[in-house]
Image (cartoon, rainbow, N blue to C red; front, top):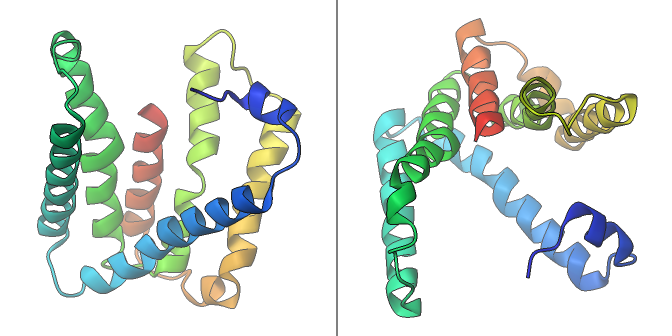
Length: 179
């Protein structure tokens, strides 16, 4: 069952279980920047991407082998799945890890939080039903500001670093938006 944004909004207030899942997801997702910063100091960024993607692919294959779905329906769209894998995993992970060789986890997470902004810009340009609005822009601004507030004083301390590293992280956000 898929819950759309409209269906989620009509479902009612979030339950304690919903909040717990959201916090767990935030901890896992946000923690990845912290651990990536540590990892890139020991392992070359591209090797790290290879390990991360390979481990995930193996885990997914094991899961699918246990569940037993047929891949016949996916084979005609293999090219699209490959493109999705590149734009949603390989390219952004490579750019994030490269950028984090020079930038801290706080700056990386805030720049990554710009993904909805880039998604909205692309959707506005490439679709007819997702146009820019002040409400959408305000929501994105609040999200980025909220991420910056959550990171706190550590963000201001980590704002230095080379421009290329910041552009790498913005490039990762753009890649996620394309995906």
